[in-house]
Length: 155
Image 1 (cartoon, one colour):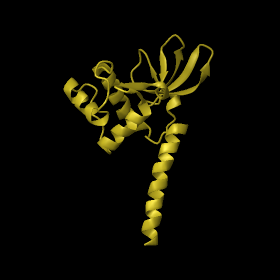
Image 2 (spheres, one colour):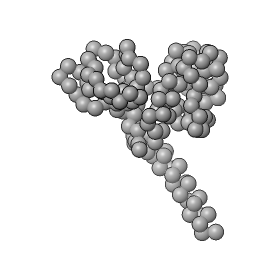
Image 3 (cartoon, one colour):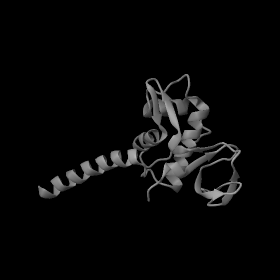
Image 4 (cartoon, helix red, strand yellow):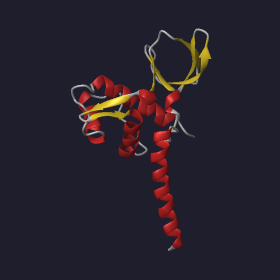
């Protein structure tokens, strides 16, 4: 199952992540990833697609998808620490996952959101993202793995 981050939404005033289903007259119809409850969200709410979110680094920005994949690589099958963890634990995690994150502009409140989103995606979606940039890097990894398997079978 591929996850399309352009359809995974964070909505101001609401906890959790939502999947965009369709446009309604008064807003957007969304489904909570955890509860599967559908609702209509007014367009005056701030709605952010996870695909459009980036994390500040010393050299610029890194797409959230890349950060989530680095977290997955670092954490394996484990969940990230709770978003309610101590600030030092969250800073330590991001120092390992994204060592060059901008300590002046990427706040602990942002870390809590990213960690919460990571845990929701880990439990209710997948880290197999279906956007062009992600498909290329995933394809390269798959290609490498496929070549290794073929080499192993040939031997």
